[in-house]
Image 1 (tube, rainbow, N blue to C red):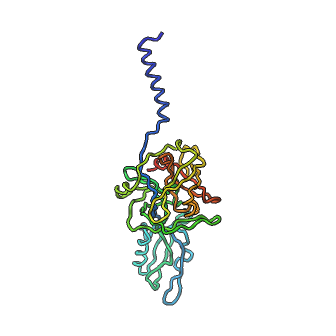
Image 2 (spheres, one colour; image 1 turned 90 degrees about the horizontal axis):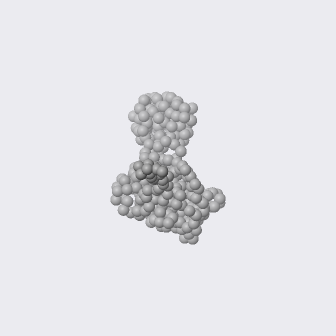
Length: 325
């Protein structure tokens, strides 16, 4: 027979074991602000060479880059200074007075040092290079938390390192429907004002912080679903197909994969809303990031369209996106 003190200790021990097992299955409710707004994304990157051209001078057409700089080279330094933007390099070229520039560049992840002499053309000094320092894209804002940290897109935008970026609202001006194996796309223009700063470009989305907390007032507060709550059946997405008006469209969740880590394709879905079928022909580029709502909770974000059938596509779990905030 166990004494009272032993029984008490046994009871406490068993209670602790039960609590330990239960804790693993408890999902603390998190509330977020769901959007669906059309956004413009600008990612700042290293200065990259897009192409080359001959520079027209008084007597000839010259190619200062010839056998020195090639398409897709990443320009890192000029005369020992970091090249922080295209305009920075352009200023160095114009102020060179035609003197040699020592440029450090990356080609296939290998560092090279070259000496290039700018030539004077019709519009000042030039190296004959087409360059860029950012990538632009159209997508959909998925959600924000109460601190203004946002998640969008549902997939990685570019496969390279970024140096931050800016978030804008965008206005949808038209939709090109999919044809054959060519996916459709939203046509949209960036609005003027920056609404947020981008900090990361990850496997399942682009993330950052909204500049003005008042933007949250335009969004609906909603519970974030645990990935295990997603199930086959009826759901809907929020997205823009005209200007900046957010609309809801019905979809059917066809499959929910059991995933333990973030993946771009955790949900398989089909567009069942006849209105969206008529307007867009299915899922088009620019819808990436559209919130997927089921049973009044956010379960995921649209991430990809099926090449074989534009009415079908994939989404990632919102729970994983939330962990990236």
